[in-house]
Image (cartoon, rainbow, N blue to C red):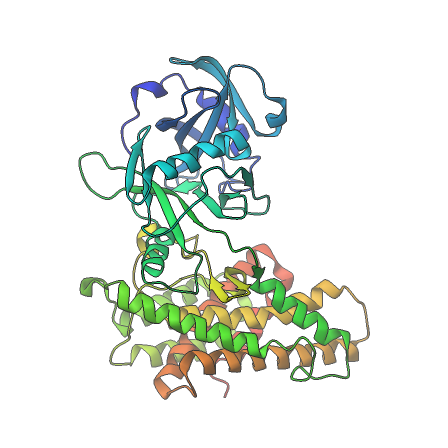
Length: 474
């Protein structure tokens, strides 16, 4: 396995039980692909009674020749069946130290999740080595180590456990050796006192063998008790707009423009803090020409998947050429996958969450610096999607004239909120160079969306195609 050599306590594992369990989970990313579990390694063990918590990494090899993947599967062990955990049963086998055990996915087990929390408590304001794992605590952040854990039901790519109303533990399911930007970015923002993120309390990692970088396994952070999902707030505003056909977006009771402006200010402050706190390696700074070349490459690949892009290809290339002609571009650590669903509105203002970057990209690529305007473009595209999603939720037949009017009003809502967001982020009107960056990054994001929609939701591809049609049409 690429994360290290299997320890002596792993040879007993029955690897055949993992594949049937993985394909049933929400977080497994290999659904639809033939694979084999080719290795398993115990990397940590917590607890000295029942349950015992084993943290495992299992390696998957795909029949289609894709790169092997590592998944983190923490297990809680009991000598007797636990019927309350039947839905999380993984298998049973003889452990060299414990005897015959019944193994359950530990994230579903409230007793097992408490072991993580107590391990963080042992780290206090520093580092603790426990059961083969290394637990870190951020100085100045207090946690309640007596709280009971409850698994969130809605999350997909990772698994999160809420401890009372105090903290949240996110366990990364798909693991790549090395640092995870969700932890490193939250750490920098927390230490800088940023008010626009949930503060990081600590993280757990696998220490490297023989030096090198650790592998991040999970993070403990502040639970935002008063938080409302930004996407849900935007959809509520759209529904209010559609509910009264006589009212324009600027007059609607659910007008979102003020929130859009505050969100733009929050993003600007986050970017400023990251620029100040996270140094950029000069060797990793791409030239404008290199960024434009990558965008053109993604367009050429998309043209083979989305026929509707062809009429707009020349204008898209022109947008990329304009970016490539710039003398330089400021790059830094950014979010990398920003949209309204990655924001939370709390009583204390907007918070930005999930700094892992675009999940489909390799970790090494997600760690590279990028232009802050990529995050801006992601949010602009999210504002464009909200009215379309709201329209589809209505599920009303209506006549063509009524539908056209709703779409006009939706476009007004989107454009209004994009203007307020952009003005707040930029501190006024965009400069000519900023407009070039916005056009290129919005085009790049919309091209990506056309491919995604074509492959997953063909009826939605018209949304990014309409945005592509507007690029360079001024």
